[in-house]
Length: 434
Image (cartoon, rainbow, N blue to C red; front, side, top):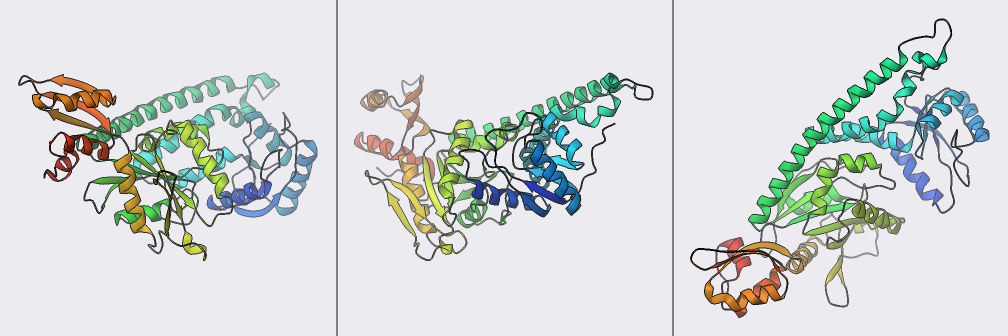
């Protein structure tokens, strides 16, 4: 009879090196993850393999070594920095006589402790249930009919089927609730689009300082802490710019290496703020020696959520931890701002960042609804020639009602050349400029 070991906080960590991996950096991040979950780290066991063992992942010899360490250190939990199949987790627990948790389960546990809003809790519960659905058999092994024998026959299959059905029902209910959340967010984005209010989303590796930067830019007091996944709930606030144009900033959940697909799917409603943003501020820890690897990991997640083509402004944060770094803006060959070096904690470089955001938003295409008089037929033809017109309707008075997608600066030049009021200023302040 197999009974799962009781839960505990005294943890033994296992991290194996595979070809092509950065062992030292991944191990350091793994230890920080475990501590973020509240684990009392007793020791870290390393090793190397060319490929995972099908039955135990770590191999029989390494499993015996881990079992000896579990017994010697009285560990209650063994956490592996790898993704395990349900059968591998079950086999390891039998050998180690301790509860086994893989990387996905660890991240889900951290998310469960960090979720604060109703939406965040729904998203975490959905990811947990999707992860749990494939591991139900472990808890009911002692009731399976297939084991046979006097005293061991029981309603195992019936219980498993009941649990699976209940989980399917709950997953369906959670998805419907999250669909409603997604619809509300979509309506909010449409409303901001009608008011010509662009959205700037903060993205980046976990613990890069996104929430601290968000508070510094907006004057808010969102929760910020030097810990992994301090932010799970998207917060949207207005950010003042010197130009006076309205802009809102969205703080999003941090990314990490090998972010579980169930989490990406569950948090899709939240991550859509990044996908549909007019500009992404990719916040990077300037003091992190592994920052280039972190940048690649963030880009892979952006690719997964469909935000790969969104315009990006890199923000190198925490320059106060690097004595040689000063606030500055790096530009490309065309003179466009690509990187800004700031310190959200001290406020150094934030004026440069706001100016760079205003500059990039002026270059980013924005969807606007315009009304052109009959006399502006030449301007209408120019908009069509630049393939900027998304929709067109003709009003009863003969005027043209257009939905166009153009950078504000380019739209401003066309209207000024036609002798018409600047639509970007009219929408923002109500006062024409041209």
